[in-house]
Each structure stands twice: as C-alpha cells, then as structure tokens.
Amino acid sequence: MIEFHYETDFQLQDESKFADWLARVVVSENAHIAQLDYIFCTDAYLLEKNQQYLNHDTYTDIITFDYSEGRNIAGDVFISVDRLKENSVKYNVRFDEEILRVMAHGALHLLGYKDKSVEEIEVMRKKEEEKIKLFHVEQ
Image 1 (cartoon, rainbow, N blue to C red):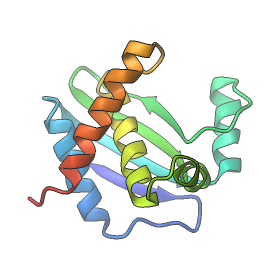
Image 2: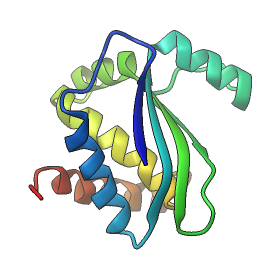
Image 3: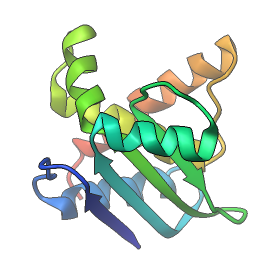
C-alpha cells in the first residue's frame, strides 16, 4: 500500500500514476511493498524531524525511516518541497524531474541502497536515473 500525505500546500497531480510507478520501482528490485508513505512538507517541518530523530541541525531534501523486513518494503519518506524547488533551480532541472529523483531515492534507500561513499553515490545516481525512466513507461 502506498499513501501520500501533505504538510504543505503542494500536492501531487494524479497520485495513482505515482503509486503505480513506485510499485514498479520496488518490483523491479524483486521486492514487495508492505506500506510506503510519502510525506511532502516544508523545510521547517523536515528540519524539525531531522533535529528530533537524527540530531542533525541541517536542511535536507529527504529523510527516510525504514521499517522494512527483508524484501517487504515499508517506510516513511519525508520530502521537503522547498528543497526540491531550490535544488531544481540550483541543478538546472525541471521540478517534476527533481521530484521523481527524490521519490526514487527514498524508495532505493528502503531497498537497501546507500549513499555514503563515492561508490555508493555513483550506484545510487545510476539507479535513480533507471527508476525515473520507469515513470514514463505507461502500464
């Protein structure tokens, strides 16, 4: 089950299309979705979560809380819409592509991909691009 929640004025258009895509992302990695919640929020909201749960006093675009058991994927993915807007300008990419990248990034973390080392970041970026392409494939 995939659900979308909003702690900001932003809202996804056609949630079912995003849910179908995320299901394909997870299945493409030989896993199943138990429960996946995406929470779209502001910088301030996500900073509070970052401080409260991770003891980090920095802004970030995404925080993922993993409750997965084996290949049964479950988690909460918090995404700052403010960061996405800023990053889309900073990296000169369309907002709709940036949101797909960050949503895929959260799912990939739940699937076991990391992004701490240079090698892990390289794999993560390749996987993000691979999964974004799945969004544009109609089922």
